[in-house]
Length: 470
Image (tube, rainbow, N blue to C red; front, side, top):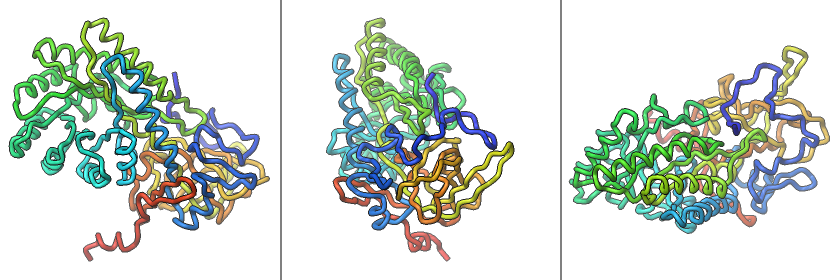
């Protein structure tokens, strides 16, 4: 069984099994960093042709740094792997999951590189449209869509709306009638497969908010209603069993159940939906304890499963759609911090831990506090000859749970003014960012060929005060 990030919590003085004392505390674990990242002989981290000192001088810290070359290469790898694997089975398309990280510049990359996009709100839709991506390449998701969001999507020419409830079928039909259009829809299906991941990011078991169930018949009832409603057009079925998944077996079983529903609908109603969304949630390595599948391996295993289902049932497979988000954006980004106070804390059993405070925290990365997620870190601004010490990277907020990196070995001489980099923060860090303690959200910048391109600027005090009505 491949490991996942939601592992057991560690007691005082304990370290996770994957965390080893490094031979060289300055070395990068290559699998955790963007393709253009590396350290020079003096220990300074470089990415996209720039040193982190140059980046910090221009944009300050904390800041989310995105390697454009890495992001786009990962997107292209998914696009090409799934196109090749599913070519004999009716084809496949890849839609980037915008909830991982979205900006107008990113939407422009997707447009240039031939990917689609999943959006989960009116805000994500508006950003994608402003970035130049055609709405016909988008899917609107979410368990509660407002009338305004559905209307905006239909007016833009949305490719699909994934309806999540019986109520929503009527809601979409009513708005489509008002707009004098036929709404293309998917039915979000709950197939009863529990992903091997944290409870908060597992999304296909029965006791949760998403979708309509195969088990209780509500998914089939929804299909009957959609087919009987002229204002909506059944384009496909959709599943998403969770996030940060390292084992394809759950995906294969979920696909088998969804394919069974697809076949039942076709045989009973005479409607063979042309598409099938198999979700995303593909895992990435946050530490050396993670062992994710690559795009080619994922595509090959999923295509093998779909091909077997088609042969066994005698039913031609629909066009397959997948939705990687974290697997594209996560490893392409890292967060750069400036170190402040460092405290040496004595623990039971003779252990000590260094608490390394940085100028960000749970406001720019809440995943450690929310999921118990594990991260790594490296001293980024210089080389150190000091021995490695067990450390915990913590933020500026008034919470003892304000932890960025729970367990890491950092140089014993790390101190105020040093730059610290935390890898694999390109996904679900900025989108989950907050203004807790009225801290300002960091910028997101892309780097490539020695050039910094701002994607999202740093928040300013004026922005916060403009929202305060006084």
